[in-house]
Amino acid sequence: MPDSLVSSPLPSSFRIEEDGRAFHLDPRDPGFFADPYPTYAALHAGAPVAHWHEAGCLTVASHPLVERILKSREFGRVLSEDGSGRGARTEGRDHLAHFDALEEHSLLDLEAPAHTRLRALLTRAFVSRRIEALAPTIETVAQELIDRFDPSEPFDLVSAFAEPLPVAVIAGLIGVPREATPDLLRWSHAMVAMYQMGRTAEVERVADEASREFRDFLLQVIAEKRQAPGDDLVSALIAAETPSGRLSEAEIVSLVVLLLNAGHEATVHQFGNAIAAFAASGLSLSEIAGDEAGLERVVEEALRFDTPLHLFRRIALKDTEIDGLVLKRGTEVALLLAAANHDPAVFPDPERFDPTRERIPHVSFGAGLHFCIGAPLARLELKLGLRALAERFPALAPSETPRFRDSYHFRGVERLMVRAG
Image 1: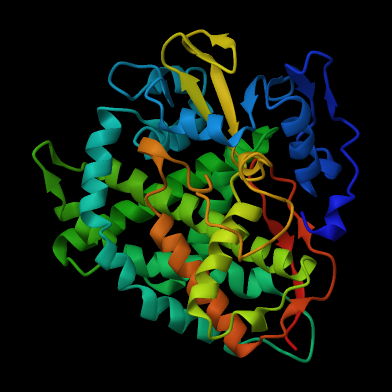
Image 2 (image 1 turned 45 degrees about the horizontal axis):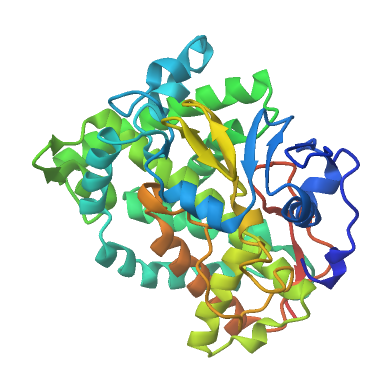
């Protein structure tokens, strides 16, 4: 991290065992979620492939190994022959019936052939021209939000800009009124909380209820689009067809939920993380105003430097080996994406936010079959959003130390108080 954070002490709960093959770390240790990068540096130095006791699985911090596993057909998300694996995931989870029903067709939890079929149909609808056509909407929404800033007082950039921008864009993409965004936000927050470590029974109850409400909302939207198709994603998903057939209503619902939850949450966090990184590194938004090439470099460095998704789990689909360790079929591996993006063997001086650094592919969007299908939209939102901020308020800067969420394995600023001038 930047100089102000490099000296952060290691979390009190962190300890690497003598052989370097295991470590202890409480993911809810405030010293960790406030700044995980000193811990990642220690893992690179002493335990790049090691068992994380509290997570209950092997972790990989090495960039080359993370990239290799993401691209390898020896690792996947489920073990079943048909690529679904629903039975194993939902056993003893009757209280999560609605949540699990949406997850049943989630691309994140499928492998071939199920994944191949759904991804092909989504790609038919989620074409690049549809993303490019969103640029005017993104720019308009960004300007409308900035118009509401009160430059005379500090304000929270997360609630004023980072959160409403991507959800408004997603609403337009889906083809629903922007008035629906409060519900979309509420459902998304409730469901994404399920992926955090140490979730409670209350978190599960709220997530299941949100899943039911979100499903019912989207089924109504689908029914309306069947009667009156529009130039929107839901209409395109209804019409999408490959030799393997069309999407069922349940599949359309799951795909739209995934696009909102994965795309919106990550983009919100990335805006806050990027502004925080700028300020802590002594850079100013004024430096990218009017510099299109420089802006694109800033987006890529922000994605590498403080990515929103820090951990992605994979399962060994067969007996295999990594870093001299023999893994049995079914062994779970946690890929530390943010740690990989700070691998000193790949990224020189990784703790420095440097938009001019040589372009080396990061793994913030994954790789291989599960590479994030929403990556072009995320990049476009970040680029246009940051450009709008830089042009209107080039002196925008935090007025207090950014506060990060207790939400590992996602990372994002919970509150980012800024001054506009």
